[in-house]
Length: 249
Image (cartoon, rainbow, N blue to C red):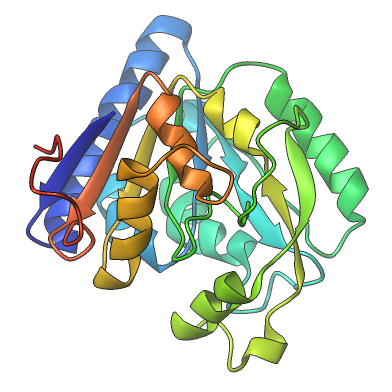
């Protein structure tokens, strides 16, 4: 695992976007097509802005998969992750092919249908974050490290739901859906490379637990320690609790 720390979110986003564009372009050269997984949320704003502004990326040959979505939330809702991806990644790039998770449809059917498409070929790079409770996608602690299903329906814990209110996506805790569709831990882990983007002081405790603590379902993103090609992008605030001896660039 490589850990890189930047002075601010803007520099972090630009550096992560540079690596992401290299991976995508390499896949296009080698296989003619690139498959990516994209996260959403406030932590990804600067990264996606920099990535969509990258010149000389042939987005028409890029295939996108969706990490997670709330069950029952319409695409018109400000917190919809489908809406987020459409506005911040798909429409700005005229992306070639994408598979979004329809939170208004039958969750089991969505998991099966999109999961089959996802399993059809390997993923070149996954863009992920780490939640305030250490979650990876919507796999809250204790996360299921065993299931081989590409997607699963999960129940969101209180800490996760509070984070969504704190970021301004919902007006109250009661307004946050209790369930979501999430890509599984093992499916994320199958990606050839993973770029993990985690700015802000509110993530510092989770960053320390997941990067320096034991690999455990109680800190779901700790599983990234065992992947062979992960780069974690932090700012000074999110890296504040890391031990002085941590291997960071």
